Amino acid sequence: MAWVLLLIAGVFEVVWATMIKHADSITDWLITLFFIGVSFLLLIRSYKTIPVAAAYTVFVGIGTGATYFVGILMGEPFSIIQLLFLAILLAGIVGMKVFTDSHKERSEQ
Image (cartoon, rainbow, N blue to C red):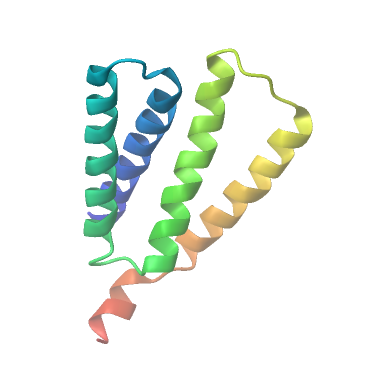
């Protein structure tokens, strides 16, 4: 369940990171702040089960990768070399997820 919360937190991060660029009214900023708050609350909640280093790495990776692709869809420039380095980043994030045993580490405490 913590990984699901972390995934949702990452999705919310993409929303608020994208909204920051386009926010130009008080309502836009209030909505953006809402998404920031919910995103970080879900991230903090995931820390109860998932080790902090793994959770934060996955959170930032989701935000980085998905925000990059949302930016491309919204007309921002991209290059093959950027995609290569993004793939390297995402490989590291998958590695953090695969090699983190959250149940064993938390049950020993």
